[in-house]
Length: 273
Length: 254
Image 1 (spheres, rainbow over the protein chains, first blue to last red):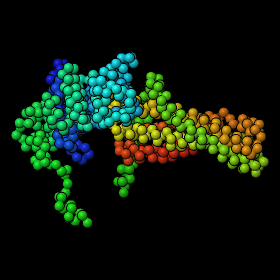
Image 2 (image 1 turned 90 degrees about the vertical axis):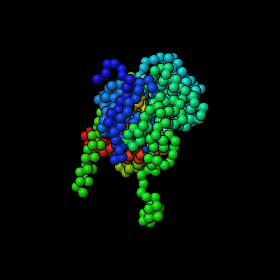
Image 3 (image 1 turned 120 degrees about the vertical axis):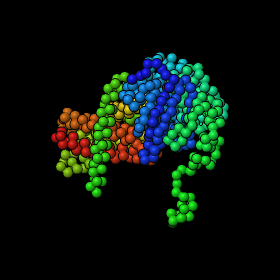
Image 4 (image 1 turned 180 degrees about the horizontal axis):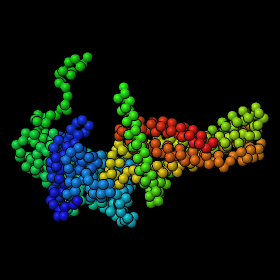
């Protein structure tokens, strides 16, 4: 099932199609995520970036197409092997998703307590190190409800790192962070990626931050990869769609408005009565 | 019309099948959680059981008091007011103890379970566990289910005991029934099979109430409205199921 030599391709997606109810999200998506790099996935809101993360981690199952993680087709895994694979992932959820009945310390310790037989002393050591990395060692005894949104996400980041995963997935890591913690987190993402040799996938709208941190980015639009390359390359591109996205223009191939009936018709027409 | 009926039936069969599968999954993980992670179960026994004690005891006392009043005034017509102890004990141990405890349990602990689990789902906590390779059914639902199953019979026993105390206070201390007659009549008429019936009922109701609560929470639509609806359905479905099971068990045990 596994390929012998580790290739550069960590995650390969071929011909992916997925529909949310009747609304198709991906039509024929192909992309390859390189090992040891920071890969950004960008796109206008509603293009299914979070859905893509859920497909990669098999929380959702594609309608068509295959997803390989390290050469293994993840749709073929049984639950034991799926859980084994998921232990290699660290995922930062969009809203943190901390366990609200546990303290900050216990939240970060949770994967260790579930999966390892480390002594309390050692767990304490590991957890405090990770909390220190996100600047929240002092908040260890607080409960998640006492934290601000940004702090919650930093705790969630510490939790995602605690098992030393091979692959870190960040869903909108920069939302709700003040400029100081944003700078720290960006450097942290970069440093972890390089020092520990892990691969990172991050979904974000934050062009500025992405261009400082990402090695490679994919712009997704209309269910397909619209453009790919390093952020600098994307900036130079001539494609209308990429230009519109990179420069934040309202007019262009991507419609700002969600599909709707004619504006004038709806306001003044027969519907109004 | 026929098509609608067919679809409803199909949906019902599908849900019922999923429900059974869910129950089997809970049972599958129960022994290992009980042995290896007993602490998680203890915490839930505290949440479902210990925290329900006050309401169970207050209700038990007043139900017992009502039994004392009714028993006294109705038995007095046959000059049998000394049998009020037997009357209250039979009613409490066989019927009212398990049934009312189950209904109160659904209202106090079942709703708490359903809304807690539903909210964990709505805030992605269950997905986060999935992503940490922790099975939420095993880690979250099984301890809560076991906590409920363990708590229910204990609560029913407390309810019956406090109920007898209430009956004693009303009939002996207030209405003047002889205390010796009260206890002797009770001992003579209450058989071990009556107590067994009460225990069997409370165990079954405990399984029913806990199972429905975790099922509704786990399958809640992950929105504020969905969690609210799941909570309501927990109480309604538990009440219906408990009364139906009560009838069936009583019929079998006669």
